[in-house]
Image (cartoon, rainbow, N blue to C red; front, side, top):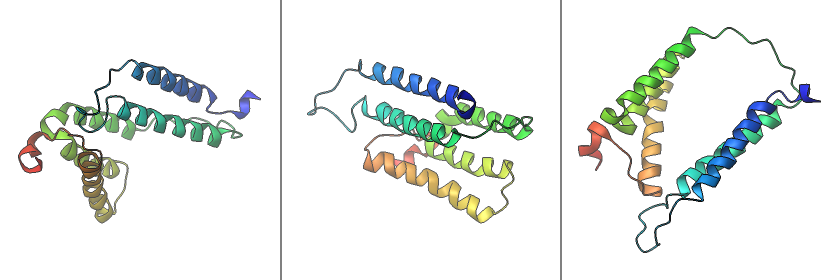
Length: 153
């Protein structure tokens, strides 16, 4: 029975983490609606946790009935990707969200072998711009912009 549930253990661990973190959000204090600017402190974490829970359930559903295959050796690209993400984390405060995301969206596809430069550039420009517009205009949240702050404020 359990051999048919390839992703059962990681899925259950993720769901337990989601429930625990959701419970922690119930301890957050709320701001009266009159003084609230944008979303309440609980809204964004709960939204992210909800997405995580849905994606975990999708993972469990897709993994059911699949036989565990042999694990390939970890590629050097994974280690370089981890290094790029660490560098993005370290440069985030200086570059800000939009520029850091644009560079990450540009470099990772190139690292993993994508050679259609036009599509990579469109992806590297449109993704950060759309996320910036979603968060700053639709959700009315201020995002750290680093060196771009004078132009995006």
